[in-house]
Length: 110
Image 1 (cartoon, rainbow, N blue to C red):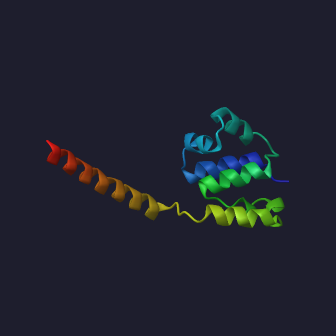
Image 2 (cartoon, rainbow, N blue to C red; image 1 turned 135 degrees about the vertical axis):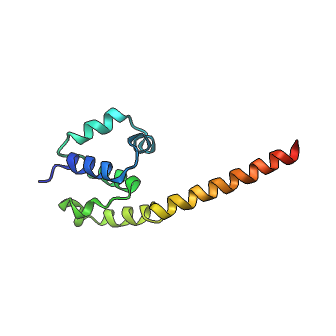
Image 3 (cartoon, rainbow, N blue to C red; image 1 turned 60 degrees about the vertical axis):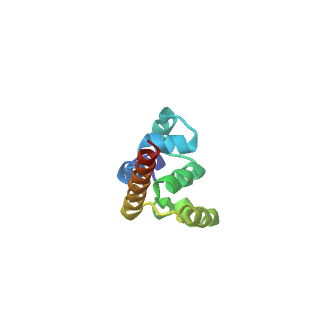
């Protein structure tokens, strides 16, 4: 049996997504997440929820998820919003454009 905690930790580290963001989305503490890393039997629901956040498909690594029909629907739900380099750049550009427009409006009011 695979050590799910180690798989979870490796996937989170590889994703580059801050632990703070992950635990905030889960409404948990950092300590709770670090405790999960040491557990060989992390619940599948936890694995799937974190997988959605970090955009990682654990069904390729965990045998129990391969046959679970819930996995496909949860993964499909999580994959609707892209989280990649293009998405990051898109939102950065959008933010900068809106910030410039906001600054222009402030200048006009003065």
